[in-house]
Each structure stands twice: as structure tokens, then as C-alpha cells.
Image 1 (cartoon, one colour):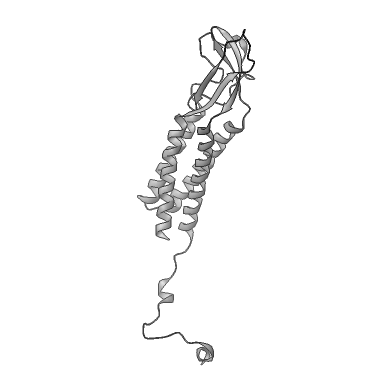
Image 2 (cartoon, one colour; image 1 turned 90 degrees about the vertical axis):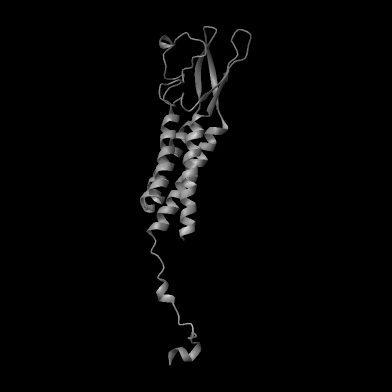
Length: 198
């Protein structure tokens, strides 16, 4: 059981590192909605650090749109990737608490909660119908966003971390088997049949 628990804790730490890396990778690509000669072609990607579902073409007024080239209405100061990266660090810390701190139940529970939070944040971004205004050549261009593989991978890694954390917590809460209860004398053979009732 100890070997299995160690493997789960190591898996949590690996998932945490993967979450941090995936938070910095491109999550979305925005492309021009209507292709014609009058609208500049847009094809630009943004990482999780730059975007949030709380801001898109439906929630921004045209008057507040700046005129810088490459600006996107999806941009925010603190994107959802900062939150997932922080939760990735929580996963790594949870593995440390479970392994080095000697508290696998606490570490597993923390990892399970962090993994579920990652799935919630990344999943909400992954299922969203993304659209945005992107400025190109001082022209506001309406674009549609498509989800990149990194965001789907982030959802999967978060789910794995939640499962690993739950399993580690469950194993730590289970009572250890009492080896003495099954310790037979080497010279004594277990009785069978009617001899066992004698």
C-alpha cells in the first residue's frame, strides 16, 4: 500500500508541474469571422495569462476600445492562467505535505480540491463560445475564438490530479492491516474439515 501511495503522491507533483507549464501555453486562437477584402485578416493566439471568460465582445463597449494594433477585447490584467498556475503550485505543495510532511491524508485532500478547481476554471474556458474584438490597422475586427490543445490538456491533468488526490486521501484513511492477526506458527498447519471444530 505504501508503494501505491507514493506513486499517487508523485503523480500529484507531476500534475502540478504540468498545470503550471500548460497555464503559460496558448489557450485560444482568434480568427477573422468574415473573410473579405475590406476587413484585415486576424489569426492570433493568447495564453491563459492573457485571457478571461469574464471579458469578450459581449461585455465590452466600443467606446472603451483602444486603438493599438493587436489589442484584443479578451485581454485582462490577470488572466485565468494565473489562477490555474497558482493551483498547480498548490498541487506541488500538497505532494510535499503528503510526502515530506508525513500527512498524506491532508495532502491528498488538498490536491483533490485543487484539481477540481483547475477543472472548473479551465473547463469553463474550454466550453465557452469565444468571440472578441481585435484591432488591426486601426480597424476593430470581430473574431471567433477556437480552443487550443493546451487548454484541453489542462482540463485532463486537473482531473487526474483530483483523482490521484482522492485516492491518496482514501488510502491514508483506510486502516492498516493487522499482520499479527494472520501470523501463524511455522510448525502449525491450519486445520481443515471437522478437525477445525474439535
